[in-house]
Length: 395
Ligand SMILES: *Cc1c(COP(=O)(O)O)cnc(C)c1O
Image (tube, helix red, strand yellow):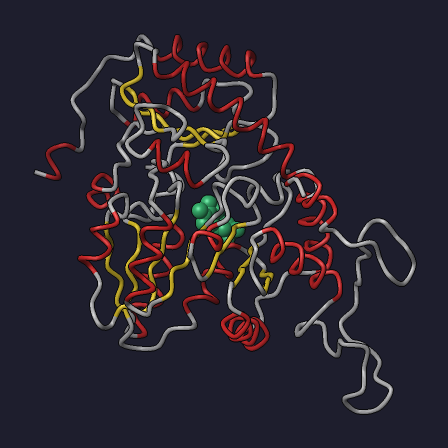
């Protein structure tokens, strides 16, 4: 079956009424015939048919056994971390999502879980970082916002040999482009707020486990900790997923054109996009995914927060906002926005320069998007190139 057909028909027709749209079961509880005798649902934190529909769809799309839906991407990540216990160690990709970094270091380190960071673009670095205490390898590929690519299959081989779990945050690629569980990962997490929802109208998170036993453990955590996704938001996520395949196709086309435009622009220093031949792991990206996604980052020759601020306030169609993956183009300045919670030095070491700008290339006509960027470049042309005002801090 082709991806589009599979995707559209992974959404079930309601067996009770024939409703082609999944019904929203806006209820807190379910009437029982006798204590413990019910139709598969007893209390809506433990299970809700609308949420179940979403959980089954994402499990199918990611080729896993179990899908589990949460109130946000971070709640999904949080549930996976609760598989660990004090003394366990996580090795995470160094260019990790800022919110995950904050959760790892400010919440979980307190409970005796150690987190080390490695440049996972070379699988060897993961191998070298593993200790007997390592229980979980945390990857994002592509990463946010420098679009680093890690070889999922190569790292999965390492985790198998060391009996630790491999979890991939698949938010940037989505299952339309990349299915980490088929490459050997054990767990996939999503901020469904982004491409899965696709319309910037939802906060949601999903976990998919490959193995049913591991899935059951995360489902237990979902019910025990309670950070579930509501029936209406589950429905919105399903509605988003219906067009995932089509949207991602166009996001990839538009982003490639934008990346190539930026690459030749005289005011641009570096462009980060896995679809460019100059990208460090372009070949691996090509092997493990069907497309390179809709996110493009770049730095300015004038590598200052001042120039970046002027740029991100000069576009018309690229709206200045956190988040990504919606039909409307967005842009952001990670150093002052999404990655603000990461200390300056660490942020720069991870490749997030002061002038780095992240684009979420939307579904507008791509000529309009390129013209919009061109206009912003002209606006910042007159800003004097200054010494980076933070550069002395590091030295
Ligand atoms: C946004 C994002 C998250 C967090 O998801 P929320 O839905 O905002 O909680 C996690 N990982 C990545 C890669 C993200 O982009």
